[in-house]
Length: 413
Image 1 (cartoon, rainbow, N blue to C red):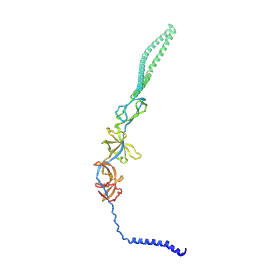
Image 2: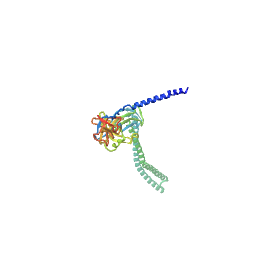
Image 3: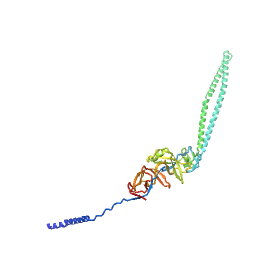
Image 4: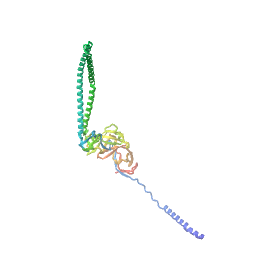
């Protein structure tokens, strides 16, 4: 390739395209700069239409909704205290029973025989005591007679000694008289020993009588325990046996609760505990079957919940409330009256502690403290709040705006 041809090829492939691109860019910039200018359109601020609620400060008692369950403070497990067959089951699960009513009857034939044995044993001990007293009386009388006989024997011994000394009687008669004295002395000692030991023998027999009496009382008690009865008015939770079963000592047969010990157990959030611990009269209410049941506060639990920090409260159910143990219920807790608070719709709340009021057609955030709920005049649920900035006739928005912020332009419906 010659230098000339190389030069023309370079001009064609490199220089010429660059000149075309540069010319096009120059023409574009010229046209852009020569375009007539358009005046800028002013940006209009959007106005948000909202519904409002007028604030009216008043004195009101806040209420909070709680969830709890029906419990009984008196639940008993009635167990067998003897070994016997179940003769009859008189109740079923869910039955209402009266105090003293028979629940289960156990076979009493074995215990009746045991009772007869205990009675016979006590009669035997009683007869032995009477015999001992008679023997003591006999021994006492016999001792007096034997003492008189000993006096005669001693006189005879003295006479025989005198006769033998005067050679008027053989010595054998003296020996016989001496023998009689010694034999009678031995008899006196035995008789006196019987009399001296009488209190000990009588005490031993009386102890045996007490033991027999205790065994008899146990037999009577066991016989009574064949009738398992209701310790109070209540309802049967469960029956754990049936007719013909062999009940052993300690077997659970019937579970029941006292219908007059029913209460509602509900956990109180930590932020409301101060109201309940103030010493003021606090009560709740329960709506059931179209009725409002009042529930006075009875007591607070001695321990707090480890997870939420609340404390269980126990409310007394009226004695005529026909509610089952274990039922979950919703109750309304009535708190003491608060001064200068506002009742607002739930739609006015943003989060847990903020509302927006309208000042000069713009939103202004107000931090509030929620105190509880209250029922409005038309039955609607309102939230009681307190804030130092809220005044009578303030307008709070009830429209939930996704971009609500202080300064946002709004208009009311």
